[in-house]
Length: 250
Image (cartoon, rainbow, N blue to C red; front, side, top):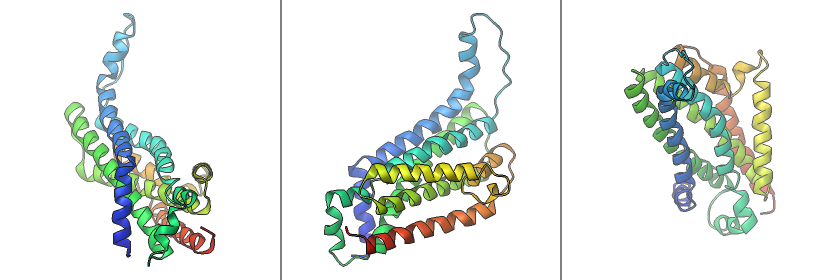
């Protein structure tokens, strides 16, 4: 049994357990609601103002995109942890992991297939949200730079892969999904706090979201060190999960 066969099994699990549906629905909701909110917010405030004149400057596509990135950076992380925290822990808890690993499959292949299925689920979610956001932002608020928008969503997706890989690592550490999810959230929270320290901020994965916001607002900015560090974290997390699975009692 190779990685591709394991991946197909895990991909089917994403569909059967409704994880794909949930992730797609959440991202699609944000992709639809953000430009709609910016388009109709002045009218909503005017209706609720009880005759008091409220002057609001016209919103631009950049405003909607910046809000879209910011919203996904908050809600998307929580969704990533909730979806990935039981990826391995649940199988260990139920004992089904033994059935899979009793076949000719390596621990590394098992971890890679798990992460790959989760990544595909989130890529589909990000793509659906991005298409909805792009369409409605263009129709309601004005034109959007296609290349910049594509780069924004690629950065968002990479940040979610970091979150998924960290959560998957903790899911390999524990049989408890709650323990895995809690430690993943704490780790991501600590990383977020560290990113508030100016000398370290450019190296933290959360800088990818800041890069996305700068592309949305200014069409520029970069965070190449964060990109490299994010890739290293993903690889290290998968290797850690592999080593833990190969040494711990399943």
